[in-house]
Image 1 (tube, rainbow, N blue to C red):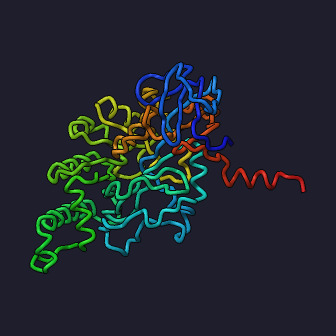
Image 2 (cartoon, rainbow, N blue to C red):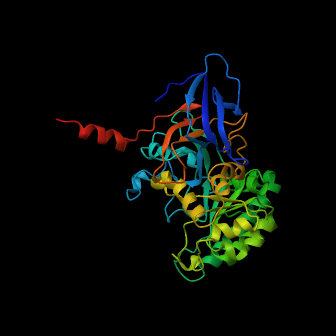
Length: 395
């Protein structure tokens, strides 16, 4: 592994900047934690360490916009799963902060980095209003770049009885109205002169911030009819909606585009897994993309499969998704959707989250040879690699 230097030049590669067509035989110049130049015939400062990458491919670091990295170590062991609350708790837990339980030293993180992942949105789980997510870079020192990134709401059918969907929408409207009342009457609420509200002050404060558009609201929703209801609620309350899942989004793609609501979707979801996803189809993401929807790809909370995000994009390309759009769906677009202005691209001023590949990043037989996070080269060996090395040694 190369050591940290003040200035590094990645020279001679095919560079996908995340904006526009790739640059052939280009150089990316990194100083400290930022990209300072990209292109051909870039003058290099004295003392620059040059990596000759002829034949390699350079891309922005990959980003999963709905992940459980750092909060889900052993999924079947409850004590190793964080950032959630059980069914016995109040289904509205807007004040829950995933950052309080995020573990940057998780054994799962190096595996994700070995697949080119450099950043993720780490999300809470459970209930109707699950809590607040964070944006992290996959480093152990100060990984959290933004706290209270988004508020998360789940409106998937829970299968626990008749009317559960209608009750969920009723409860959501109720808590938003309470938050609106709280936002306009903080003084009377504190002095006890306001009518009793259904939530704690902590939950109401977070919901009020969403109503003020200080943070987006990620709605996990699959059924076409439910998507339309979510868009209606977002219009009523002037929310900034992001749609997660959206298995039947192709049916209402024009309405999603008209609402300017970006979507986070697994393009491999092509079969019904519940009554919410009866009309899933393989070209769901492609149809929404063609309708003008901003589409980002996600593995939808699969922390232990995060390293496979590039294969999801590659399969989308094999099914007709434009190549550069698929790459943008796992780099630039997740950053844009969540308002992270300096990640997901390779351009002057961007954070140097960069991956060097020995071939097409969408091909299973290619892999990262170098990964830079915040300009620092990271060790691509995983715990599994170390165990293999240990036990293959002759005794």
